[in-house]
Length: 271
Ligand SMILES: NC(=O)c1ccc[n+]([C@@H]2O[C@H](COP(=O)([O-])OP(=O)(O)OC[C@H]3O[C@@H](n4cnc5c(N)ncnc54)[C@H](OP(=O)(O)O)[C@@H]3O)[C@@H](O)[C@H]2O)c1
Figure 1 (spheres, protein in one colour):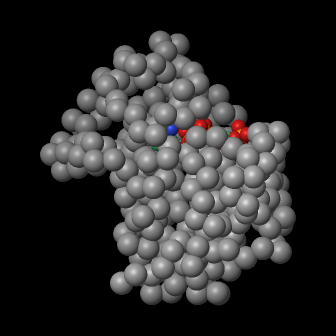
Figure 2 (tube, rainbow, N blue to C red):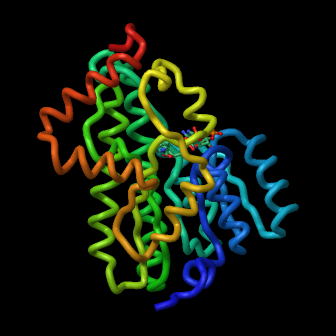
């Protein structure tokens, strides 16, 4: 059954976290091209202002910027407060960060900030905007998780645990919201060429055999699954790898293999 365009289903407003770069920026561009008015959230005010100007000029839509550090409770609440006048019909929980290194040895401040950004912020935004969607019987919620959420990843432990949380949360919500008019999707990209990935310190991804996708192809592959499936692994190679690892290897074997791969790539002082 054709359910119409994304804008017909969820518009007019979409809110995208981490929208000033990488996958979030690709979401902002794609949804603007689809005719959405958008709220873009990130920390750097100037980068947001540049995105706003570029998007409004190219697509003629309304773009509202909110400079906010989503690893803080006060800023997450401010995002909710500053969009009270809008009907947010599509929420893209995209902003995320990595803590590279062994869990024991991580700086508590950094690990906890990662957990607040990757876990608490999307949970809080989802509870707030999702409640309004449930009342309206109309809306879409996307969680940008990761291949790393499907298995434990030594030396990216906080990150993979945070993405596993997203995966379980979103899949549970998908089942709970079936037939309510609210669609929930967890999309899990694999390696994607983004500023964040390019500048990640403490790990040398050249030492791990990985095929990179573009942010644009990640967004297109993910959004077409919204309303159709609880979760999707982006890219056939990534899907195949997860399928094989989950179905054919014991958790212990998979962990040993992942540790061996990651150990070579992570900086010695972070092991
Ligand atoms: N790239 C990959 O290979 C890959 C693979 C799997 C999953 N993912 C997931 O995809 C999502 C996007 O990743 P990406 O690689 O596109 O990221 P990225 O290039 O690092 O961009 C991150 C975006 O989030 C914003 N951001 C970062 N920290 C923030 C904070 N504390 N509060 C608010 N905004 C914040 C950044 O802007 P400011 O710096 O201005 O805040 C930027 O707009 C993440 O959830 C990531 O885990 C990425």
